[in-house]
Length: 136
Ligand SMILES: [Zn+2]
View (cartoon, rainbow, N blue to C red):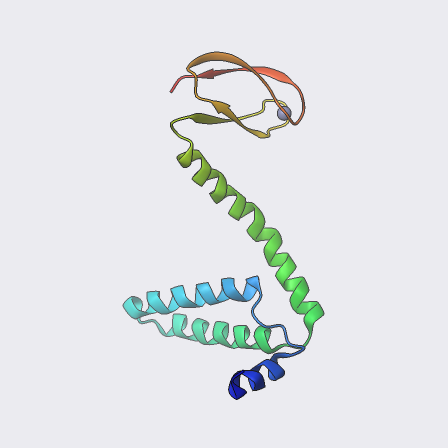
């Protein structure tokens, strides 16, 4: 292995490194840089500097317990947002063959075949039957 990479690897032992929260912060940092190219604001520049400092601090931090808790708190927020976008992507993918409906009893999202008219559907989660009317 390259001697320089080996030294970096040795330096990073016991440090937080790049977790998902850091990657998200880096994405915000990149967006702020691009926005500031057009806006050229001192306030955004100072936010960029603070964010860059925080990213470096989190990456090099040896307090793995606290960084891990921050990362878990972030991932609790990220999971439902990510699930929402995956559902939207699936709705677009299946637009010709299926429809997505909510169970009237437990609010679970169900994927039913696209057949126009009234149908009776059984929710696989709560086992309740209810009727749906698929119009388009
Ligand atoms: Zn249900």
